[in-house]
Image (cartoon, rainbow, N blue to C red; front, side, top):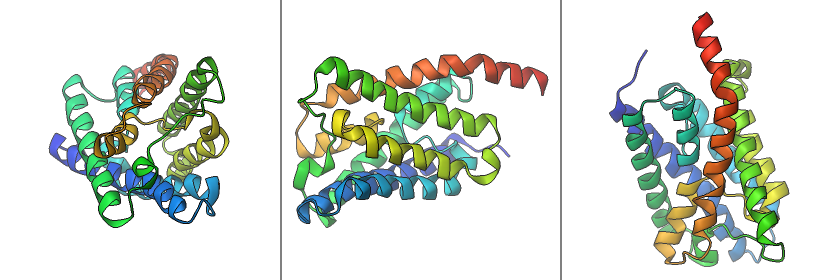
Length: 224
């Protein structure tokens, strides 16, 4: 069954909203609790959000919820050039609505849950780590797609890699992996200092992996 671009737009908006509320709201809430929840809480929250999003909307939109992932899917031929606009608009609007929700109902601390790199590390470490986190996410997503959903565990796998990236890599790069998730709190809080990182490194990571997987998908389509 094929779905219209409007249907794709709506579910991507809702899915991105859920993801960003969980991802940023958990950070704001943890700050209100003086950090007692810890990094595990910040990692589990988007894991849960992605399980909800992937199983609810994956069959309609492939559950991108992330502009860097959308570009990866375009490179592998899963979506058309015109669909990029629908995805990007949905992801950015959904993320902004999520940050407004967090501001209104959870709190305003930590710049609304914005990602921040750890400048105790040099930039030549921070940037590749963010590229790596995004590449791992894209690789798991494409593995899920290529294996037809890992026999029902696709949502767990995708949510899991995001949670693991955050748990192990956020202390270096912030582990956004998602330009929309980074943009929304920056826009609503007015703090743009590190936004450049999250609008470059995630795209680099997903694009590299997309080119690695492109021939695999082409071969699969030719055989089907």
